[in-house]
Length: 314
Ligand code: ATP
Ligand code: MG
Image (tube, rainbow, N blue to C red; front, side, top):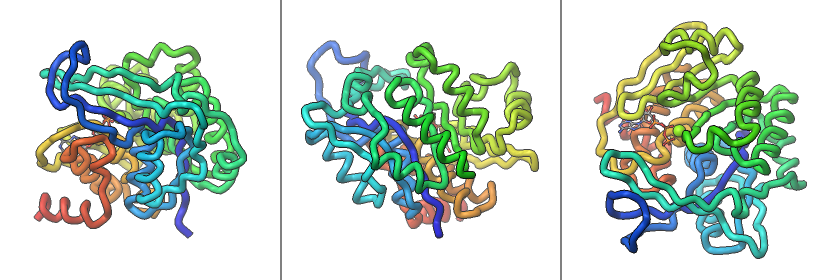
């Protein structure tokens, strides 16, 4: 039987400015709503690859919620753990790229339906059923979400389940109360750690990557998978290092690349693939993701990944 993956975290819509510039201080053309939320994108990528997957979250009884429920269900994600909250609004993020590639956001998350998660019979049933838990750092930054996410980690690992962890932390949220402690607690149980950029140094004293990886492995993390944007990715474990060169693609919208990368890595890892194979497909999933406008639009099927890899390697 295929192993089933659970994540807990925010579901929202993303609405994107179609021009580059500094934020939202004047009326401007926008496109959206796109289904979004880092945990939702991650779990959608698993669903598209055919891995049994579920998300515990909360949306409002509105079209922004329905956009997400419809997409996730179409991609075979189990949506039984998504509570539909009457009279509340689904979370949203307005995003505009600046000319330097950085992003300006207007968020409605903490005070939206998704920010008020609590245990439900449906979410507890999923925690009892799933074999693997994935934690997105963003989910630990909102109090309601964090409590449920930590409960899921606790219950699934107590039953011998495995754990992956993508810190996915934007500097704006790092100061949230209790976040540090929650991150440390999750890291201590992590099998697969998936940092990008400077995130590898969040939990280490080291000042170079090799030393940071060593520190993490010494603390009990089994595998460290470093995401490098358009520079590809690397995998580290006690048995050594593997690298994936970047696949050359036209980058349309980088949002969601890391989440699709993680979803693909976990899908192949749980199916028993070698680290090299899991890394190769994850690298392709990240590259595929950036070719599409909209954070979840670039989640790929197995056929799409095979086509991209044979084009890149052939
Ligand atoms: P985010 O949190 O915004 O979703 P991230 O910072 O977690 O992203 P990235 O390092 O940006 O993750 O991307 C994840 C992976 O996707 C990279 O390691 C790489 O394999 C692939 N990737 C991303 N951007 C590109 C690109 N422009 N060309 C080729 N591959 C890419
Ligand atoms: Mg990320």
